Amino acid sequence: MKSKQTMAYQSLLTRQKEIAWTREERPYLKRIERLECLKKMLTEHEEAFMEALKKDLGKSAVESYASELAILFNEIDYVKSNLKKWLKPNQSYHIGIGGLGKSSLSYQPYGSVLIISPWNYPLQLTLMPLIGAIAAGNSCFIKPSEFAPAVSSMFSELIPKYFDAELITVVEGDSSVAEELLELDWDFIFFTGSKKVGKKIYQAAAERQVPVVLELGGKNPCIVEPTGLTKETIRQIAWGKFLNAGQTCIAPDTVYVHESIYPQFLDQLKKQIEMFYGASPKNSSDYSRIIHQKHLNQLLRYLKDGLVVYGGTFEEEQLYLAPTILTDIQKGSSIMKEEIFGPILPVIPYSSIESLTNKLLMQPVPLVTYVFSKNKASIKNIEQQLRSGAFSVNQVIRHAAHSSVPFGGVKESGVGNYHGFAGLQAFSYQKVYYEQKNARSLPQQYPPYQISQLKRLKKWRKWLF
Image (tube, rainbow, N blue to C red; front, side, top):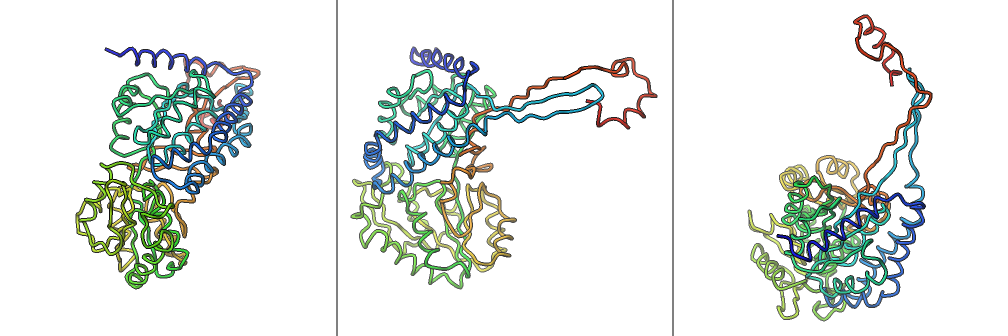
């Protein structure tokens, strides 16, 4: 039997569908107003959001603004400046024996959307899909992560002040609340999180034939060729790996370094970490914390899968784990099979790019493959050999911050993509409107048919419809 709360959600969800499906008189302007309202909420409570991120993840103000708020502001501005063009129906005409036909293709809102967001970037990864959903004309339920309680509480407090519940509703709670929500009759589900939970959501959605976007994770390989070893390469990899204490779905998971530059890479990487965070990173205001004790315990187990050549220190009370470099990884160990999602960086030497790509082909498809090299032929070869949601050369993470670039995974790393125009497409279905002008038909169109018609049919097939 459904609880009273679930029945209340279902009633509100039904009302959300009605609003989304009602043809708006001026859809573009209303959606722009909602996007401006969302930006106003962020602007007016910018400091409070940064403080909430500090409480949940130990993020510095600079990191919080750069990796969460700035990306959202840029996305809202980009969508606003392009939405009118995107919403314009794509028209075409067709001339055939039956006369002139006109077709129009437009993006229509699904209706009521459920957004389930993660804890690692709790602000950005909740509101980024919301921007696409609003732009497409949907109403939304948001289920933020219970593991980022400060940000979740702010959503629960602020969104009702800026939006009617029939447009956006926030539901707080643990996994049991999420499971309860999944039993409702959604028109679309957007999930960001682990593969394990994503699989359950996919199965629940399939029961009701609900379309989904799943943004999952993966063991993103980072390949450093001999020509790619520079100071900037080291900076990029260290920054991308240890940003948010490694709790980033597109962080370099494991670095594969050519054996000829392996000692140099390790030496430079150690120095770069100290340049970023000092000799004692736990005292650095720029270094984040692990989200909760259970995740810290899992990361500590990974330390046993290889040789710690840098870092490895931790303090459970502070949920602190130092930036760590791991070498001599044990064959078949957990760290080589599971997404690390923390500040532990395995560094593995390789002898030939052919043997490395063959090895990586045997692993699940990652969100992104990183390559640092100046050898264009080699870069092209690697790109052609490996599958991933993105292929990034001589940089990490930044590709995911561009509104004009779709973001998403493939197979194990996700289903579908979003950001910018891709976000509008993700939260819409394409509706075809077809009208026949000056309609007329030939008697031969209708049964009974004559076999003698077949020759003429083949000759004039391009103009039949």
